[in-house]
Length: 441
Image 1 (cartoon, rainbow, N blue to C red):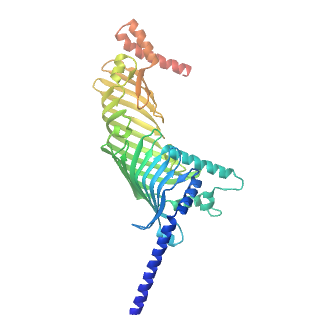
Image 2: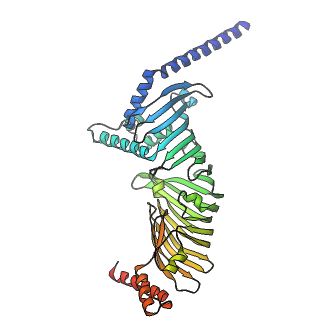
Image 3: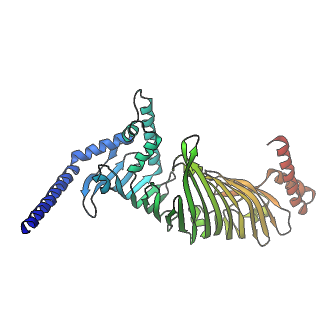
Protein backbone atom coordinates (compact mmCIF):
# COMPACT_ATOMS: atom_id res chain seq x y z
CA UNK A 1 0.00 0.00 0.00
CA UNK A 2 2.85 2.35 0.88
CA UNK A 3 4.54 1.58 -2.46
CA UNK A 4 1.33 2.38 -4.35
CA UNK A 5 0.93 5.65 -2.46
CA UNK A 6 4.58 6.54 -3.13
CA UNK A 7 4.13 5.77 -6.83
CA UNK A 8 1.02 7.94 -7.10
CA UNK A 9 2.81 10.76 -5.28
CA UNK A 10 5.78 10.54 -7.64
CA UNK A 11 3.50 10.57 -10.69
CA UNK A 12 1.63 13.62 -9.35
CA UNK A 13 4.91 15.38 -8.63
CA UNK A 14 6.17 14.57 -12.12
CA UNK A 15 2.94 15.93 -13.66
CA UNK A 16 3.26 19.16 -11.65
CA UNK A 17 6.89 19.57 -12.71
CA UNK A 18 5.95 18.86 -16.32
CA UNK A 19 3.15 21.44 -16.24
CA UNK A 20 5.46 23.95 -14.59
CA UNK A 21 8.04 23.33 -17.30
CA UNK A 22 5.44 23.75 -20.04
CA UNK A 23 4.21 26.94 -18.40
CA UNK A 24 7.72 28.34 -18.17
CA UNK A 25 8.46 27.40 -21.77
CA UNK A 26 5.17 28.90 -22.93
CA UNK A 27 5.85 32.03 -20.91
CA UNK A 28 9.26 32.41 -22.51
CA UNK A 29 7.95 31.78 -26.04
CA UNK A 30 4.94 34.08 -25.74
CA UNK A 31 7.05 36.80 -24.16
CA UNK A 32 9.70 36.67 -26.88
CA UNK A 33 10.19 39.57 -29.26
CA UNK A 34 9.60 37.31 -32.28
CA UNK A 35 6.17 36.27 -31.02
CA UNK A 36 5.25 39.89 -30.20
CA UNK A 37 6.19 41.04 -33.70
CA UNK A 38 4.18 38.22 -35.22
CA UNK A 39 1.12 39.27 -33.21
CA UNK A 40 1.64 42.86 -34.34
CA UNK A 41 1.79 41.78 -37.99
CA UNK A 42 -1.31 39.60 -37.73
CA UNK A 43 -3.30 42.33 -35.93
CA UNK A 44 -2.18 44.98 -38.44
CA UNK A 45 -3.21 42.74 -41.36
CA UNK A 46 -6.58 41.99 -39.76
CA UNK A 47 -7.44 45.67 -39.08
CA UNK A 48 -5.76 47.21 -42.10
CA UNK A 49 -4.01 49.71 -39.80
CA UNK A 50 -0.63 49.58 -38.03
CA UNK A 51 -0.85 47.99 -34.57
CA UNK A 52 1.86 48.18 -31.91
CA UNK A 53 2.00 45.78 -28.95
CA UNK A 54 4.30 46.67 -26.07
CA UNK A 55 4.45 43.24 -24.48
CA UNK A 56 2.82 39.81 -24.19
CA UNK A 57 2.89 37.49 -21.20
CA UNK A 58 1.22 34.43 -19.78
CA UNK A 59 -0.31 35.29 -16.41
CA UNK A 60 -0.87 32.37 -14.02
CA UNK A 61 -2.53 34.26 -11.16
CA UNK A 62 -5.32 34.57 -10.13
CA UNK A 63 -6.30 32.50 -13.19
CA UNK A 64 -4.26 31.51 -16.26
CA UNK A 65 -4.55 34.12 -18.99
CA UNK A 66 -2.76 35.71 -21.91
CA UNK A 67 -2.12 39.40 -21.26
CA UNK A 68 -1.19 42.03 -23.85
CA UNK A 69 0.05 45.43 -22.71
CA UNK A 70 0.79 48.74 -24.39
CA UNK A 71 -1.52 48.13 -27.37
CA UNK A 72 -1.87 51.01 -29.82
CA UNK A 73 -3.86 51.05 -33.04
CA UNK A 74 -2.07 53.78 -34.96
CA UNK A 75 -5.09 55.49 -36.42
CA UNK A 76 -5.54 59.26 -36.25
CA UNK A 77 -6.05 59.78 -33.35
CA UNK A 78 -4.64 56.51 -31.96
CA UNK A 79 -6.73 53.99 -30.06
CA UNK A 80 -4.85 52.75 -26.97
CA UNK A 81 -5.31 49.85 -24.54
CA UNK A 82 -3.02 49.76 -21.51
CA UNK A 83 -3.75 46.08 -20.78
CA UNK A 84 -5.92 43.40 -22.33
CA UNK A 85 -6.32 40.00 -20.67
CA UNK A 86 -7.91 36.96 -22.32
CA UNK A 87 -8.75 33.95 -20.17
CA UNK A 88 -9.76 30.77 -22.00
CA UNK A 89 -12.66 28.51 -21.11
CA UNK A 90 -10.93 25.42 -19.76
CA UNK A 91 -13.90 23.07 -20.18
CA UNK A 92 -14.12 23.95 -23.88
CA UNK A 93 -10.33 23.76 -24.22
CA UNK A 94 -10.29 20.19 -22.88
CA UNK A 95 -12.85 19.34 -25.56
CA UNK A 96 -10.60 20.77 -28.28
CA UNK A 97 -12.49 24.06 -28.68
CA UNK A 98 -11.09 27.55 -28.04
CA UNK A 99 -13.47 29.87 -26.21
CA UNK A 100 -12.76 33.12 -24.40
CA UNK A 101 -14.22 32.83 -20.93
CA UNK A 102 -13.21 36.27 -19.62
CA UNK A 103 -11.98 39.48 -21.21
CA UNK A 104 -10.48 42.19 -18.99
CA UNK A 105 -9.72 45.62 -20.45
CA UNK A 106 -7.90 48.23 -18.37
CA UNK A 107 -7.10 51.89 -18.98
CA UNK A 108 -8.24 52.18 -22.57
CA UNK A 109 -8.87 55.34 -24.59
CA UNK A 110 -11.31 54.82 -27.48
CA UNK A 111 -11.77 57.95 -29.64
CA UNK A 112 -14.86 57.75 -31.84
CA UNK A 113 -12.78 59.05 -34.74
CA UNK A 114 -10.40 56.10 -34.33
CA UNK A 115 -13.30 53.64 -34.09
CA UNK A 116 -14.74 55.06 -37.33
CA UNK A 117 -11.34 54.72 -39.02
CA UNK A 118 -11.07 51.06 -37.96
CA UNK A 119 -14.60 50.28 -39.17
CA UNK A 120 -13.91 52.01 -42.49
CA UNK A 121 -10.69 50.02 -42.93
CA UNK A 122 -12.48 46.73 -42.21
CA UNK A 123 -15.23 47.65 -44.66
CA UNK A 124 -12.66 48.36 -47.38
CA UNK A 125 -10.95 45.01 -46.73
CA UNK A 126 -14.27 43.21 -46.98
CA UNK A 127 -15.20 44.94 -50.24
CA UNK A 128 -11.76 44.19 -51.71
CA UNK A 129 -12.08 40.52 -50.76
CA UNK A 130 -15.54 40.27 -52.31
CA UNK A 131 -14.38 42.01 -55.49
CA UNK A 132 -11.39 39.68 -55.99
CA UNK A 133 -12.39 36.78 -58.31
CA UNK A 134 -12.57 33.41 -56.61
CA UNK A 135 -11.78 34.83 -53.17
CA UNK A 136 -13.94 35.02 -50.07
CA UNK A 137 -13.33 37.04 -46.89
CA UNK A 138 -11.06 35.16 -44.50
CA UNK A 139 -13.40 35.61 -41.59
CA UNK A 140 -16.22 33.88 -43.47
CA UNK A 141 -14.08 30.94 -44.63
CA UNK A 142 -12.38 30.49 -41.25
CA UNK A 143 -15.48 30.35 -39.11
CA UNK A 144 -18.12 28.81 -41.36
CA UNK A 145 -17.90 25.16 -42.29
CA UNK A 146 -18.75 24.11 -45.84
CA UNK A 147 -22.42 24.68 -46.56
CA UNK A 148 -22.97 26.84 -43.48
CA UNK A 149 -25.22 29.82 -43.88
CA UNK A 150 -25.87 32.92 -41.84
CA UNK A 151 -26.86 30.89 -38.83
CA UNK A 152 -23.48 29.14 -38.90
CA UNK A 153 -21.70 32.48 -39.05
CA UNK A 154 -23.67 33.79 -36.07
CA UNK A 155 -22.85 30.64 -34.10
CA UNK A 156 -19.14 31.09 -34.88
CA UNK A 157 -19.21 34.70 -33.74
CA UNK A 158 -21.06 33.70 -30.56
CA UNK A 159 -18.32 31.17 -29.76
CA UNK A 160 -15.73 33.93 -29.83
CA UNK A 161 -17.69 36.31 -27.62
CA UNK A 162 -16.27 36.34 -24.07
CA UNK A 163 -18.69 34.86 -21.55
CA UNK A 164 -17.67 37.59 -19.12
CA UNK A 165 -16.16 41.03 -19.76
CA UNK A 166 -14.75 43.57 -17.32
CA UNK A 167 -13.89 47.17 -18.23
CA UNK A 168 -11.82 49.26 -15.84
CA UNK A 169 -11.10 52.94 -16.50
CA UNK A 170 -12.18 52.78 -20.14
CA UNK A 171 -12.70 56.16 -21.82
CA UNK A 172 -14.69 57.00 -24.95
CA UNK A 173 -13.92 60.32 -26.66
CA UNK A 174 -16.68 61.84 -28.80
CA UNK A 175 -16.14 63.54 -32.15
CA UNK A 176 -16.40 66.87 -30.31
CA UNK A 177 -13.65 65.86 -27.88
CA UNK A 178 -15.72 65.24 -24.75
CA UNK A 179 -14.57 62.24 -22.71
CA UNK A 180 -16.69 59.72 -20.81
CA UNK A 181 -14.93 57.19 -18.57
CA UNK A 182 -16.64 54.06 -17.25
CA UNK A 183 -16.18 50.94 -15.18
CA UNK A 184 -18.43 48.16 -16.44
CA UNK A 185 -19.05 44.45 -16.39
CA UNK A 186 -21.25 42.01 -18.28
CA UNK A 187 -21.90 38.28 -18.07
CA UNK A 188 -23.43 36.48 -21.06
CA UNK A 189 -25.75 33.51 -21.01
CA UNK A 190 -25.75 30.47 -23.28
CA UNK A 191 -27.66 32.49 -25.92
CA UNK A 192 -24.91 35.17 -25.92
CA UNK A 193 -27.30 37.73 -24.42
CA UNK A 194 -26.61 39.40 -21.05
CA UNK A 195 -27.44 37.57 -17.84
CA UNK A 196 -26.47 40.66 -15.87
CA UNK A 197 -24.54 43.86 -16.46
CA UNK A 198 -23.41 46.90 -14.51
CA UNK A 199 -22.13 50.34 -15.44
CA UNK A 200 -20.62 53.22 -13.49
CA UNK A 201 -19.67 56.53 -15.12
CA UNK A 202 -16.61 57.93 -13.34
CA UNK A 203 -15.90 60.89 -15.62
CA UNK A 204 -17.94 62.90 -18.11
CA UNK A 205 -21.27 64.68 -18.26
CA UNK A 206 -23.11 61.69 -16.73
CA UNK A 207 -20.57 61.33 -13.92
CA UNK A 208 -22.04 59.46 -10.97
CA UNK A 209 -24.48 57.40 -13.05
CA UNK A 210 -24.97 53.83 -11.84
CA UNK A 211 -26.82 51.33 -13.99
CA UNK A 212 -27.70 47.66 -13.70
CA UNK A 213 -29.36 45.11 -15.96
CA UNK A 214 -30.65 41.76 -14.73
CA UNK A 215 -32.25 38.97 -16.73
CA UNK A 216 -35.57 37.90 -15.23
CA UNK A 217 -36.77 35.36 -17.80
CA UNK A 218 -36.18 34.44 -21.43
CA UNK A 219 -36.04 37.64 -23.45
CA UNK A 220 -36.85 39.94 -20.49
CA UNK A 221 -34.53 42.16 -18.44
CA UNK A 222 -34.99 44.53 -15.50
CA UNK A 223 -33.20 47.87 -15.92
CA UNK A 224 -32.41 50.36 -13.19
CA UNK A 225 -30.39 53.55 -13.57
CA UNK A 226 -29.58 56.02 -10.82
CA UNK A 227 -28.76 59.44 -12.28
CA UNK A 228 -29.31 63.09 -11.46
CA UNK A 229 -30.69 62.38 -7.99
CA UNK A 230 -33.49 60.18 -9.36
CA UNK A 231 -34.10 56.85 -11.06
CA UNK A 232 -35.00 55.41 -14.44
CA UNK A 233 -36.41 51.90 -14.05
CA UNK A 234 -38.40 49.45 -16.10
CA UNK A 235 -38.29 46.33 -18.21
CA UNK A 236 -36.79 45.63 -21.59
CA UNK A 237 -37.55 42.77 -23.96
CA UNK A 238 -35.58 41.55 -26.96
CA UNK A 239 -36.36 38.75 -29.36
CA UNK A 240 -35.72 37.67 -32.93
CA UNK A 241 -38.39 38.06 -35.59
CA UNK A 242 -38.57 37.17 -39.31
CA UNK A 243 -37.35 39.92 -41.64
CA UNK A 244 -37.82 40.08 -45.42
CA UNK A 245 -34.58 42.07 -45.81
CA UNK A 246 -32.11 40.20 -43.57
CA UNK A 247 -33.87 36.91 -42.79
CA UNK A 248 -34.00 37.63 -39.07
CA UNK A 249 -34.13 40.89 -37.13
CA UNK A 250 -33.70 41.88 -33.52
CA UNK A 251 -36.75 43.50 -31.93
CA UNK A 252 -36.20 45.60 -28.79
CA UNK A 253 -39.10 46.98 -26.80
CA UNK A 254 -39.63 48.26 -23.29
CA UNK A 255 -41.42 50.44 -20.77
CA UNK A 256 -39.50 52.85 -18.53
CA UNK A 257 -40.54 55.12 -15.65
CA UNK A 258 -38.45 58.18 -14.77
CA UNK A 259 -38.80 59.63 -11.28
CA UNK A 260 -37.18 62.75 -9.82
CA UNK A 261 -34.29 63.05 -12.29
CA UNK A 262 -32.61 66.45 -12.68
CA UNK A 263 -32.97 67.23 -16.40
CA UNK A 264 -29.69 69.15 -16.65
CA UNK A 265 -27.80 66.03 -15.52
CA UNK A 266 -28.99 64.29 -18.71
CA UNK A 267 -28.09 67.09 -21.13
CA UNK A 268 -24.76 68.32 -19.68
CA UNK A 269 -22.58 70.04 -20.70
CA UNK A 270 -25.50 71.83 -22.41
CA UNK A 271 -28.16 72.90 -19.91
CA UNK A 272 -31.13 74.17 -21.91
CA UNK A 273 -33.55 73.04 -19.20
CA UNK A 274 -33.35 72.28 -15.50
CA UNK A 275 -35.94 70.87 -13.11
CA UNK A 276 -37.15 67.51 -11.78
CA UNK A 277 -38.39 65.14 -14.47
CA UNK A 278 -41.27 62.69 -14.14
CA UNK A 279 -41.91 60.64 -17.28
CA UNK A 280 -43.33 57.44 -18.75
CA UNK A 281 -41.62 56.08 -21.88
CA UNK A 282 -42.33 53.28 -24.32
CA UNK A 283 -39.60 52.29 -26.75
CA UNK A 284 -39.19 50.00 -29.73
CA UNK A 285 -36.47 49.26 -32.28
CA UNK A 286 -36.03 46.71 -35.07
CA UNK A 287 -32.67 46.11 -36.71
CA UNK A 288 -30.56 43.34 -38.20
CA UNK A 289 -27.74 43.87 -35.65
CA UNK A 290 -27.41 45.14 -32.09
CA UNK A 291 -25.35 48.09 -33.38
CA UNK A 292 -28.27 49.13 -35.60
CA UNK A 293 -30.74 49.26 -32.72
CA UNK A 294 -29.54 52.73 -31.62
CA UNK A 295 -30.32 54.40 -34.96
CA UNK A 296 -33.61 52.49 -35.27
CA UNK A 297 -34.82 53.32 -31.75
CA UNK A 298 -38.26 54.95 -31.55
CA UNK A 299 -39.63 56.30 -28.27
CA UNK A 300 -42.81 57.94 -27.05
CA UNK A 301 -42.76 59.81 -23.75
CA UNK A 302 -45.25 61.76 -21.66
CA UNK A 303 -43.43 64.04 -19.25
CA UNK A 304 -43.76 66.71 -16.59
CA UNK A 305 -40.92 68.90 -15.32
CA UNK A 306 -41.46 70.52 -11.92
CA UNK A 307 -39.82 73.84 -11.03
CA UNK A 308 -38.52 74.07 -14.59
CA UNK A 309 -36.08 76.74 -15.76
CA UNK A 310 -35.52 77.41 -19.47
CA UNK A 311 -31.92 78.55 -19.81
CA UNK A 312 -30.83 80.73 -22.70
CA UNK A 313 -34.39 81.85 -23.46
CA UNK A 314 -36.39 84.67 -21.82
CA UNK A 315 -39.96 84.34 -23.05
CA UNK A 316 -41.17 87.30 -21.00
CA UNK A 317 -38.59 89.63 -22.54
CA UNK A 318 -39.37 88.26 -26.01
CA UNK A 319 -43.02 89.25 -25.54
CA UNK A 320 -42.29 92.63 -23.98
CA UNK A 321 -39.67 93.70 -26.55
CA UNK A 322 -41.61 92.30 -29.53
CA UNK A 323 -38.39 91.09 -31.10
CA UNK A 324 -35.41 88.75 -30.98
CA UNK A 325 -34.46 87.23 -27.64
CA UNK A 326 -31.21 85.44 -26.89
CA UNK A 327 -29.97 84.52 -23.45
CA UNK A 328 -31.71 84.93 -20.12
CA UNK A 329 -33.98 82.52 -18.27
CA UNK A 330 -37.64 81.63 -18.02
CA UNK A 331 -38.81 80.18 -14.72
CA UNK A 332 -41.84 77.90 -14.87
CA UNK A 333 -43.93 76.22 -12.20
CA UNK A 334 -44.65 73.30 -14.52
CA UNK A 335 -43.73 72.17 -18.01
CA UNK A 336 -45.51 69.22 -19.60
CA UNK A 337 -45.80 67.61 -23.00
CA UNK A 338 -45.01 64.64 -25.20
CA UNK A 339 -41.78 63.60 -26.90
CA UNK A 340 -41.44 61.33 -29.93
CA UNK A 341 -37.94 60.35 -30.98
CA UNK A 342 -36.47 58.55 -33.99
CA UNK A 343 -32.81 57.72 -33.64
CA UNK A 344 -31.08 60.94 -32.51
CA UNK A 345 -33.89 63.33 -33.55
CA UNK A 346 -36.88 64.27 -31.38
CA UNK A 347 -40.21 66.07 -31.70
CA UNK A 348 -41.77 67.81 -28.67
CA UNK A 349 -45.54 68.12 -29.05
CA UNK A 350 -48.38 69.65 -27.03
CA UNK A 351 -46.01 71.61 -24.82
CA UNK A 352 -47.79 73.44 -22.02
CA UNK A 353 -45.94 75.73 -19.61
CA UNK A 354 -47.17 78.06 -16.88
CA UNK A 355 -45.74 80.32 -14.21
CA UNK A 356 -47.82 83.02 -12.58
CA UNK A 357 -49.05 85.36 -15.31
CA UNK A 358 -47.05 83.61 -18.01
CA UNK A 359 -48.46 80.74 -20.05
CA UNK A 360 -47.13 79.12 -23.22
CA UNK A 361 -48.01 76.34 -25.64
CA UNK A 362 -46.23 75.00 -28.68
CA UNK A 363 -44.32 72.34 -30.61
CA UNK A 364 -40.53 72.13 -31.06
CA UNK A 365 -38.34 69.76 -33.10
CA UNK A 366 -34.75 68.82 -32.19
CA UNK A 367 -32.67 67.50 -35.09
CA UNK A 368 -29.89 64.92 -34.86
CA UNK A 369 -27.42 67.84 -34.93
CA UNK A 370 -29.27 69.42 -31.94
CA UNK A 371 -30.72 72.26 -34.06
CA UNK A 372 -34.07 73.64 -32.82
CA UNK A 373 -37.11 74.56 -34.91
CA UNK A 374 -40.71 75.19 -33.93
CA UNK A 375 -43.33 77.66 -32.71
CA UNK A 376 -44.62 78.65 -29.30
CA UNK A 377 -47.40 81.02 -28.33
CA UNK A 378 -46.83 83.05 -25.17
CA UNK A 379 -49.22 85.27 -23.21
CA UNK A 380 -48.74 87.41 -20.11
CA UNK A 381 -51.86 87.71 -18.01
CA UNK A 382 -54.80 88.79 -20.15
CA UNK A 383 -52.65 89.99 -23.08
CA UNK A 384 -53.02 88.62 -26.60
CA UNK A 385 -50.94 85.50 -27.35
CA UNK A 386 -47.62 86.36 -28.97
CA UNK A 387 -46.45 83.86 -31.65
CA UNK A 388 -42.71 83.11 -31.46
CA UNK A 389 -40.40 81.08 -33.70
CA UNK A 390 -37.91 78.84 -31.88
CA UNK A 391 -34.47 78.46 -33.48
CA UNK A 392 -30.81 78.11 -32.70
CA UNK A 393 -29.46 75.01 -30.99
CA UNK A 394 -29.77 73.29 -27.63
CA UNK A 395 -26.57 75.04 -26.57
CA UNK A 396 -27.73 78.48 -27.80
CA UNK A 397 -31.52 78.66 -28.31
CA UNK A 398 -33.27 81.79 -29.57
CA UNK A 399 -36.83 83.00 -30.11
CA UNK A 400 -38.15 85.62 -32.53
CA UNK A 401 -41.53 86.88 -33.62
CA UNK A 402 -42.90 85.29 -36.77
CA UNK A 403 -42.58 87.47 -39.88
CA UNK A 404 -46.35 87.90 -40.06
CA UNK A 405 -46.51 88.91 -36.40
CA UNK A 406 -43.71 91.47 -36.88
CA UNK A 407 -45.57 93.07 -39.79
CA UNK A 408 -48.88 93.04 -37.90
CA UNK A 409 -47.27 94.56 -34.81
CA UNK A 410 -45.79 97.40 -36.88
CA UNK A 411 -49.12 98.17 -38.56
CA UNK A 412 -51.05 97.87 -35.30
CA UNK A 413 -48.67 100.23 -33.53
CA UNK A 414 -49.09 102.87 -36.21
CA UNK A 415 -52.89 102.60 -36.30
CA UNK A 416 -53.46 102.23 -32.56
CA UNK A 417 -50.32 102.53 -30.37
CA UNK A 418 -50.24 100.18 -27.37
CA UNK A 419 -53.38 98.10 -27.77
CA UNK A 420 -52.96 97.76 -31.52
CA UNK A 421 -49.52 96.19 -31.20
CA UNK A 422 -50.72 92.90 -29.68
CA UNK A 423 -53.83 92.72 -31.87
CA UNK A 424 -51.73 93.40 -34.94
CA UNK A 425 -49.29 90.61 -34.04
CA UNK A 426 -52.06 88.03 -33.77
CA UNK A 427 -53.76 89.18 -36.98
CA UNK A 428 -50.46 89.36 -38.85
CA UNK A 429 -49.45 85.87 -37.75
CA UNK A 430 -52.76 84.38 -38.83
CA UNK A 431 -52.54 86.20 -42.16
CA UNK A 432 -48.99 84.92 -42.63
CA UNK A 433 -50.04 81.33 -41.94
CA UNK A 434 -52.93 81.67 -44.37
CA UNK A 435 -50.69 82.94 -47.15
CA UNK A 436 -48.18 80.13 -46.53
CA UNK A 437 -50.94 77.55 -46.89
CA UNK A 438 -52.32 79.29 -50.00
CA UNK A 439 -48.97 79.35 -51.83
CA UNK A 440 -47.73 76.05 -50.41
CA UNK A 441 -44.78 77.55 -48.50
